[in-house]
Amino acid sequence: MGIAAGGCLVTLDDTAEDQCVRTNAGAGDLIHVGLVQASSGPEPAGGWGWRCGASSYGPRWRSGEPNGSSEDCGAMDTEGNWIDVGCNEDFRFVCEVPRP
Image 1 (cartoon, rainbow, N blue to C red):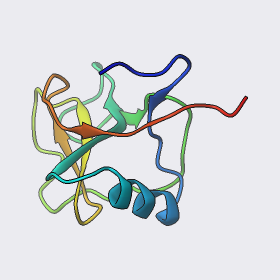
Image 2: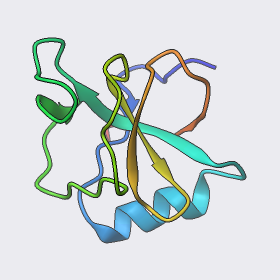
Image 3: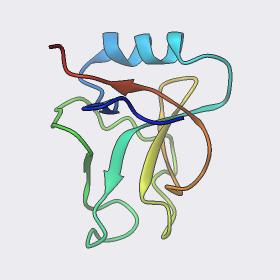
Image 4: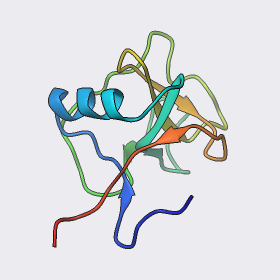
């Protein structure tokens, strides 16, 4: 499944959007969100930001996360906690597209 033209993995801006994503993403354990770690960021916790745009919301890392040296993308669990995952792992995802 591709991303709509001009779309991007969701940037979480507040608790309302966080809840909306978890409520509407369908069934499953994890949801890819737009968190990404810069390749130059110190492992495991440095250099995290959003693929599209910026947000002052968070961080909401699950206890013990981020923890992986080859896990440079972020996902959210059903409780709204963030974890680091490999960028090629398959999970549900939510994209947002700018309003015309």
